[in-house]
Amino acid sequence: MVTNPYKLERYGVPQARHRVIVIGICNDLDVTHRVPSNASYADAGVSVRTALTVAPITEAMTGNEPTRQSAIVKERLGLIGPGQNVWNADLPEHLQIKCQTRISQIYCRLHLDQPSCTVIGSGGGGTHIYHWDEPRALTNRERAQLQTFPNSYRFVGSKESVRNRIGTAVPARGARVIFEALLRSFKGEDYA
Image (tube, rainbow, N blue to C red; front, side, top):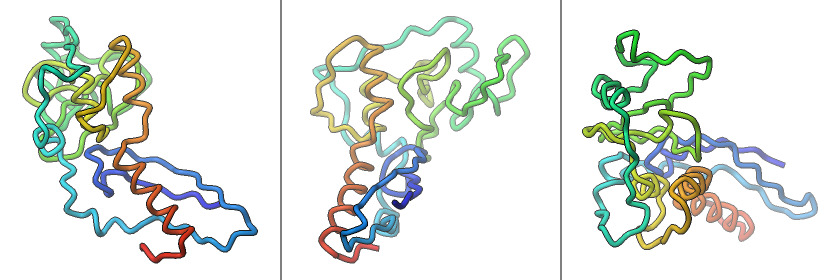
């Protein structure tokens, strides 16, 4: 068994999603699996700008329901700049969060020219990922674009169940890279 670290933004996924993928291959098979080189993905356009503007979102698509923001959240977002979160922004004491969990997704504001922070399935306040310019959480459709779901994909269910499924999914582009490498391993093709 080989474990391979994947930093999916290196493979064309527009978010900093770092995962260990465990691939098991029977010992009696003469197959060697390696992490595919990310050199061929170097110019894959992994910025938020590319992910959210290449294929425009239309009203006909599912998952466009906005999330309401309270006045305090809007005030907090007004002081968190693009590429910052609640932990590295200069916030007055009344807008700071007092908790032990310091995950970078809490009130993460996107930066247009960088990959997104990791899209997660669910969580408490502040984990939705926030627009770079507007004081609002991303819609599920925008989150799906960061996960590289095709815009033709139709989401069914409550807003929170859809959010959970989007965030816990393996990004489509990342899954493709992993499966193509695995299939090439079984074919004995060089892909490094």
